[in-house]
Amino acid sequence: MSFRDSLFNKSSKAAKAAVFALCCIAGLYSAQATERQALTLLESDQNWPIAEIMINGESSQALLDTGATVTLIQDELLETDVVFARDATISVRGLGGHRALPITQVEALKVGTQTWFNLRAVVNSADDFPIEENILPVALLDGAIIDFDFRNASVQMYDGYPKMVRGAVRNRIRYFTHEGLIFIPVEIDGVRGNAMIDTGSTVTFINARFSEQARGLKREDESQEIRGSDLKRNELRTFGFEEMQLGNKRIKNFSIPVLETDLFTSLGFEDAPMMVIGMDLLSHYRMQIDRKRERIILLR
Image 1 (cartoon, one colour):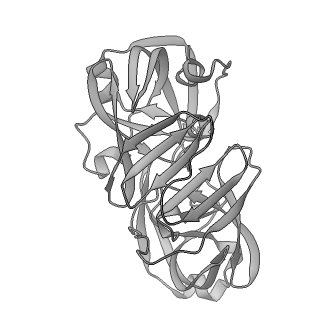
Image 2: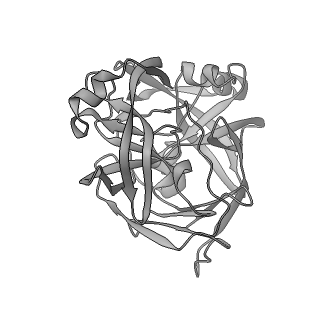
């Protein structure tokens, strides 16, 4: 039984997936009072949280990514002379290692009622990076609470306390941030590790160190593919485990993909058991990020 099946009792198939952590500029939310805002999430084949945005007055859309710390804009939305007049580049890291991509300055970017002027951004070309989307770091959004209601296709930003949902089971987990990314503690078969919350990933997986220490059993009949920032496809090996603790949720007898990636090494976690929690899992919950109290609340 796959990790997702063990939680939701649904059948799964081998799938092609994409996951990226765009890490170079850490964003901080404002401590000032934020007017309650709501964005509609658009339909996405990848289950990504996609919202409408405005770039220099033109309508577009963007992936709201907890696994990104830099804004990434498609090159077709920018003036050619603006993109290529700047010879500056920035190193963006992901599963496939570091990529040097050009940077530019966006005159105006608007999401809901929030607008940023002269925003530094990475230029996204389909030839250079495999996600053909604009990417907006969730850390850039205002609000003490970022409330992803995936079932109702909305995300809300507000201050105060996370909304209570009648009849829902709440799983409150303390998180920490590292280089602008959100991590929560997890435990698999008695081995403790950390998991990155990544709405830009379509798949949940662990690294080889986690699998080795937890002594996972390889499943020969289950496989997936994942496309990294180097544009190459990498096979995900699937391993079985007896028990996983995620906050107050205990999962029994599950399997989960294993991938060795330079991402965790570049973050300084090369010798640590690590995990990425992607949209294959998150989309089944309402996820509230309480940035003031440093809590992830999963409601179901």
